[in-house]
Image (cartoon, rainbow, N blue to C red):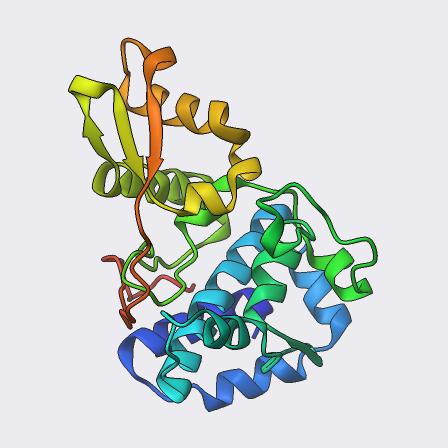
Length: 240
C-alpha cells in the first residue's frame, strides 16, 4: 500500500474506532525512498501530512489525555517525538511547523525559519500555505474540524475548510468595524501576511465595504479537549 493510501486508511480507522496498529507499523516501516517516490507532488505531500497529523493527534489524545490548557504540558505533548514515519521519529510540531510550515520556528509567529533543519524535513517540507491552519486539528475545542484530505481535491478542500472556519468562528461588531477572530491568526500572523493580510482575507471573503476601517481583535482560545471532532465526509470508496 502506498504512503498516500496508508495515511487515508489511518484517518478512516481512527474515525471509525478500528485497529490502527497494522497501519502504524506499515507507516513506520516505509523506506525513505518509498515515501519520496510516492509523495512526488506538493498536493501528495500536503494531503499525506495533514492526514498523518490529524490521525496521530487523535491517537495521542486517546493515550495521553493531556491537559492542553496548561502551557507546559501542552508544549510537551506537541514536542514529544513519538510518531514513527519511514524510520523517522517525529513530533506533532515537526509535522506542523517543520514540514507543513516550511521549517518555521513555532513561537515566532511565522517570522523565523530554522537554520539547520533535518535532511528528512528538507525532503518533505512544502511551501507555506496558510490554509493549513484551518485543516489541522490540535484536539482543543477552538480547533477546526478534521477532514479527509485527498491530493486530487486538495485545493478545493482547503478552500472549503478555510471558508467554513471563517463563517463559523469570526464574530463581527459592525457598529465598531471590529472583527473578533481566532487566536490562530495571532499565533501565525506572518503566515497570513501580517495584520494587513488578515484584514484582506476577511474583507474579501465577507465583501466588506470599508475594509480599511476594520479592526482586528483576538478571541481567547479554548484549550479544553474536544476529541474526534470530524467534519462530515464520505467514508466509502474514498481511498481507491
